[in-house]
Amino acid sequence: MTRFNGCIDLHHGKVKQIVGGSLSDKSPEQLTTNFVSEESPSYYANLYQNQGVTRCHVIKLGPNNDEAAKEALQTWPGGLQVGGGITLENAKEWLSLGASKVIVTSYLFPDAQFSKERLIELSERVGKENLVVDVSCRRKGDKWVVAMNKWQTMTDMEVNKDTLDMLSQYCSEFLIHAADVEGLCNGIDEELVECLGKWVNIPTTYAGGGRSLEDLKLVDKLSNGKVDLTFGSALDIFGGTGVTFKECVEWNSKHPA
Image (cartoon, rainbow, N blue to C red; front, side, top):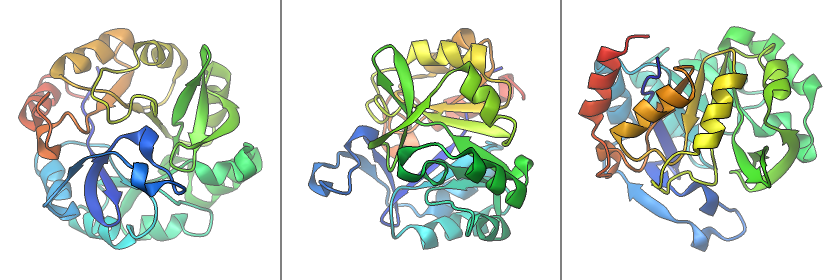
């Protein structure tokens, strides 16, 4: 059954909700921010832990987020995955700091070209069971292509059954941001979710466009319960009005893993 998984998105040390497609190093003034929390990262880590929301992820969106991420991990050691700038050199350090798993995208795509060698090396370094591959993507025609560098750079990898089968040999989980709809609260990418339900064979969390409790039901239906969902800007704890955290926790209690 589809479950609600939590997220903590960090930008310059603050918990924020950002329209994914607006992230850019070149034009920071174009950044569209939906919400900046007055609460600390530890507040959200504690909230997820107390309500039993598992497989939550902390994403560092750019620089100046390491201390905020460490704060969240210290609050719930072993309970949060961490991503954003993960490399072969620092992955084990983040696990030692309390991350349950490390999440990687950009490191696997030097010069936007997929490196299987890097994937194998990283998987061997940290252990397949401790690695999540973030297959964040954008639409390109009738396909989805992995996007890196804050979802600004298109890579040479198409998201399909073959690539997901290959990646799943070296990781234990997928995180998939639909970058085109991330933060817009205009609904999920239904076609992508349906395809993921047919393609994935390991635990998978989808993020992007979720706007109401009905989306949990929709993801469950479209993916045959094989894909989980995270809410961002629509969730009341992030300033949203579409769905409440209480509703999500109640959904999880009725749909045990």
